[in-house]
Length: 325
Length: 133
Image (cartoon, rainbow over all chains, first blue to last red; front, side):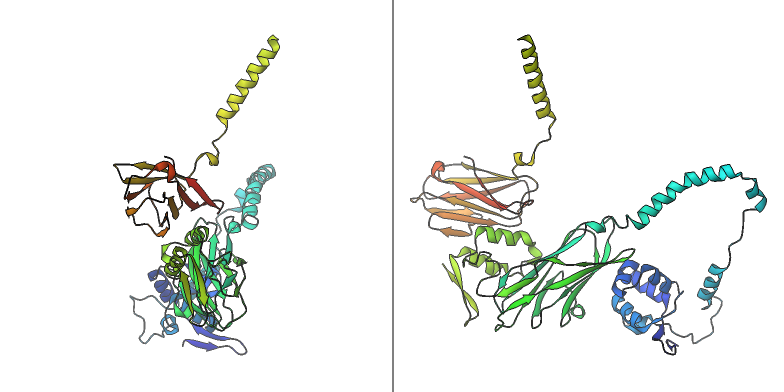
């Protein structure tokens, strides 16, 4: 049986930990990544894989399957149709392991020897070990994830845009970590807007009506970019907000700081001073915001065309720019 | 008098020592410099020298005397506005970059100022340097 229902409790399902581990390793995901995606701890993922928690909440199972990019059925435990032979290990092995692990360990230190150690020696040893414990305690509880404390996520968006035209939103992840950190970056979309592009590209299942999210691992400064467009008739301000969630030894949520709004108008988003020209400074700034992989999403060809001209005028009736030569 | 001479000597020595030991400041090293020179009659070169952290995007601008006609440039200029030519150089890598400009008549370098604009990596501000001749 794969489904279980405990009276009054959530629907539980039985997963095959070995399958979970195999799929995870085949796809190159770390336990940290899976833990971040499912929103549990790495210990829990480890226990699932080691069959110490063969029954898990269906909700977690669904998230786990989604993180592994497989269907739920693929990670469910399949009941044995034939009796296990000698070549296959017994399915009760995890339970035995659990029992074994909880059985008391064999004692090795004879009481007589202990009694020989003088109190002075014991005190001396304690004094020597105490600083080590103190240092370990400090690093464990106060210096946890020192690189993470330097991580910031900020958003850059033009204060103005033209309704119906692409508006790029830049999210800068800065900071560094000793090893790749699993993360979820989520941006809530203003009502009525549609997502035109994302970079790095994300799959459709991570684009929802009200939000988009990136999942992955990160270890160095990275730029996330997405472009949105409002309806052509939009006349107002779009508000942006989002968060970065990191699952290290404990989950950390960081609100995305920086620009939070942009107002519809008649000026190109890159025309910072709204003088109906794209100046050298403005185009250099935009080119430095992103690398070549983002140029298409930012419509850099159009931007360059406007820069080459002597000015531009937005024609709302034709929904196009008139560029003065 | 003798004491004063000793003090002066000491002060000068200390000043030199401090100057010698002080680390070079960032302002000494401009990541972009440029030189304008000619090879042959009507061919002019703008040579950029880039030092880390060099900006990946630069704008090079030359103001030509009004009587000069442009025959060609390699790479091709991005923008011409009366007698001003502009190149938008993207994804520039390496330690040097050369622009060749062929004109209808010999260019008077003293009346053809060249400016290079780029965004400073640290401050984010736009910097402008003029090419040497």
